[in-house]
Image (cartoon, one colour):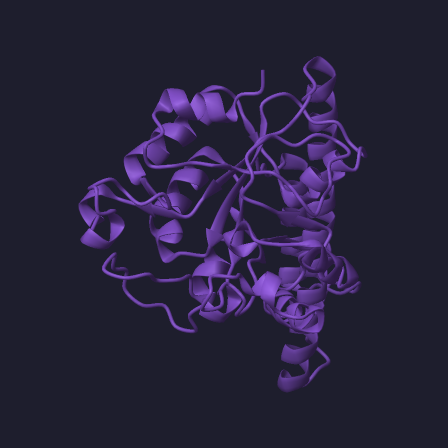
Length: 320
């Protein structure tokens, strides 16, 4: 969970005040001997560099403190394995439409009602669960760090707009983090009003706004698709085609080394293609928890379904 530490804030406040006033060694304003145009550009550049350095130092401090907290908690009660949870749509009950239901009247498996999601996040909070980052999760699998009991990695597939509307505020309330696996070709350039009448996807603006809760990884660029016979593209396409599509998605997202397989479909050639382009972690839809030493290109996840009660949820997330 993200914490802002007093020490970091104090440093930022002191340095920020000095830079903001722009005093030089003689006690004069630093812009005194510059033309207005030169002054603006030089001071702004200096401020920007100083601010970036301060942010970097603060992030490093927070990262170190987080590592210490994880290590100390793991000494008391270490995790033998870690569950990974998967969500798709989070929809308020009033926003449910015919398309959210199957022919038998039950909700489609990819929908979780908002009120149930709130109960699940509250349960995690009350039972003192720690939500992990991808980097922490990777280090755990590689055996580089221990994790405390009650650690969990939360993931969302596809990048649906309802995750921003419904899930994001709930998670932010509890200080939780999660991974959004984005279908990057579906990212909207413009932010549009929310509707549940049809599928909507995150906009660039919404992605930026939610980066305090979500980190972003690949769900391919255009390969969340299948052939006419139902074969998923990550199986039917050639190795170079797979690499080109996944690299396109990574370029759009930025710094990520993780992917979730669309439909959970992959084979040996898929894994070979991903490994060759630097994808370290690939997530399946196969149930089960994760332990150190597991195959990082075949990571298990536990899907949360609309029919799961809070008791079911406890069973899914709890490690005995």
